[in-house]
Image 1: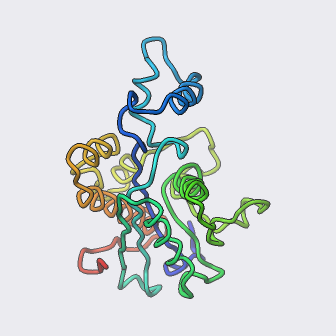
Image 2: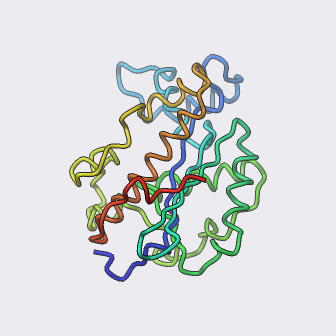
Image 3: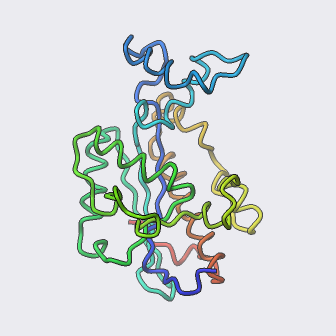
Length: 238
């Protein structure tokens, strides 16, 4: 699997998102009405719209990005793995910094692949949508309109695990468990992020959680490629 891929061609990433406004009752009337329309089809018999607002961070129209963590191999031998995060209450500033990094010469290589778990359905479109909402130009790696699926610079560890079965969903936590990779969910999980951000005001904790996800995604790719897993002394945090 992925026998012809090179480690240095991947930029591994993960994002953490929260509702742009923490509580449903604090939404402006128009936004509240629009949210109700957005989630009507998802409501179960015992649920209210307010119950579903806990998930508002998963929709780019009602959420925002607070952390983007990245990881990449400097060499194809896997001896050095660099980890970098952008974390901020100011989403536009965070996205600008992320875009500036992608626009540097090192990440302008034609063979570069952005790699995430469920990235094609979540991380990549979410980042692109929030950039447009913030009035930012998309870096070329996210300019995929009109491109065929095999022409996009994306790699998705969940899609690879599907082996063509597009009904199949496997969480990052489950996949790391069955592949014998340390779990990235030892401290908090995705459902805790909004609380930790708004109530505990602990962005640093969320950043570490996001970085652990990036490491886990990288380890999965290493397993796919039949290579040894990363060791702590190979990880350089910037």
